[in-house]
Image (cartoon, rainbow, N blue to C red):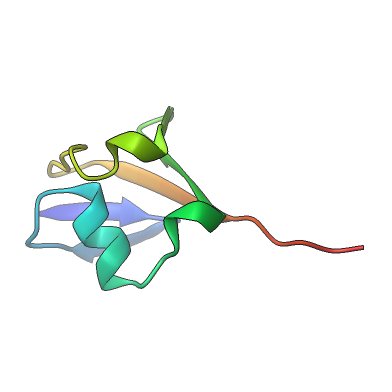
Length: 65
């Protein structure tokens, strides 16, 4: 399937958001994911399915001072 992640189209063969995050080694405690304009709760990453044409925005939390 083809999905868009942070403005970049990618081909992805897995089916869940967690699989995508694992592939790119995102730490779930330090990110926020928006799928098709809706924020996904962290508790749902393992069960949130991806479909062809989905649009994801993944934002990392960065500390600063």
